[in-house]
Length: 242
Image 1 (cartoon, rainbow, N blue to C red):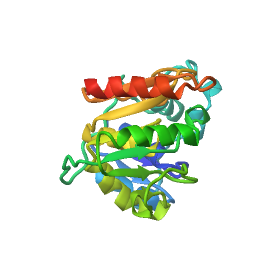
Image 2: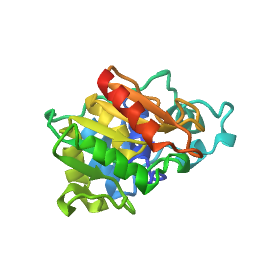
Image 3: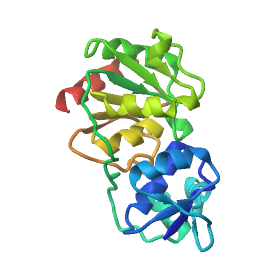
């Protein structure tokens, strides 16, 4: 089977398609984007010479709830349905990428979001950073786009899209990853990292983060009535359980 990733524009979309490809014994991919050729072979998908007969992965259709018979299903399952791909897994897990993974001592704060409801204001990130410093001396901010204005050195802020390989390494070696559903919290599941996902209760529970394993916690919050003190208390409680 050949999967056409040409519509994908983000890493989390590429990872969603990867989950579909990993259900097949022999899957290759076609894409017009360099990012795909950097990421997908790391998960065992091989490049195809041409896209004749390839399945068009319809990422944009899967993003719109009105395009699906059940808007509460996970994005990955929605992508499968929109693209005409069989996908029986109810709780997907990315197969561990090739290469070693070492549990480091640093914490990754993964900013950015797959949906607007998960965009957190700067004061929340500052509070989470202060709390994270009580657990680890080294903190990295990892993401893409405009970064939160938090007190970190430039070397601790991996925000440039050209730093994909560095971000990969930092996430793969993290002791803990905290953030909303985004490229890097999705990627962290590949190594079964301890993860706390910051999840707005306005969104269906499995829609944007369908993964689950024994080191995963979901911290719910009301995006319209953010209570930073309560969020930190809930976060500490989740961390104690991981």
